[in-house]
Image (cartoon, rainbow, N blue to C red; front, side, top):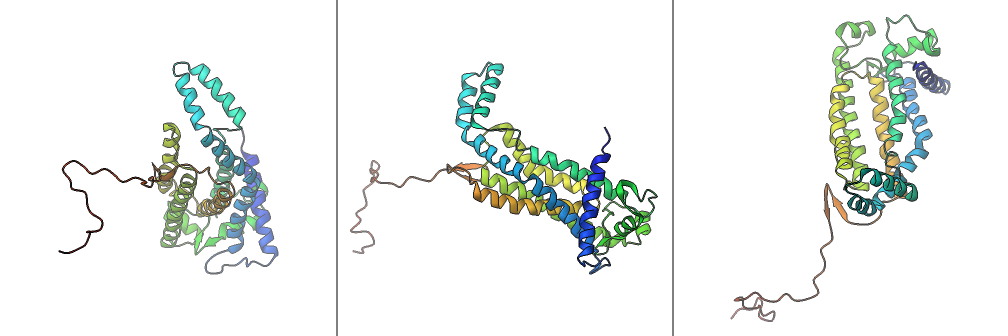
Length: 302
């Protein structure tokens, strides 16, 4: 199946935002070594996608709340149908339907964002000075040349940490500048990815299901580590997209979690669950052989 429709769609959105910023007077030339019209085009590509997916994000939170609320019932069914997987699966599906909980909803917004990410990755990787297919996916020669020359702090947005000296020479870019800018962006991408996952887990709590808990740990620790490797191959423009997505997610999750707070239950600290200690209302009996203290004589000197 051809993915050209994704590349055409991403190109169209990117070009429309670039035209908008050019039209309202954002400088096309470099300011602080940056072509802001192209940087803003990538940022607002993120905002467009996230606004379109916002209703799904709200449904994701509601579904997670429902999944938390029915955990006691899930455990009862697991104990009741321990040796009958078919019946257990049927009862669980009926419970999910009745309580309007969808265990797959948590992955849906992420899956829908992947084509956009892959499309932008493909589009930016082809914007190189030596590419002859300048008008592919609806670009004009002038737009292609403008994007190929676009930079962030002196580093081309299509360059990457792993670009060779020959590739950077075609852009007329400094190897040191590209390494520093892309390296800092990769670290920012890792940190914001970790913070996004951490924010969600701290608000919703660690799952009691071992498999779900393993997925939470993978998202919290595993994905940021893999970005250290994959970031080596990502163009700077793609990392800008990822960091912007994470920052948008942090703000979006803060608002949604405040509007739809998790049900009050036990207090979760890290992966451990703690309950408030009860206030003592009775006097503990003295142990054998221990003389009870006289409160009136406490601190008195004879």
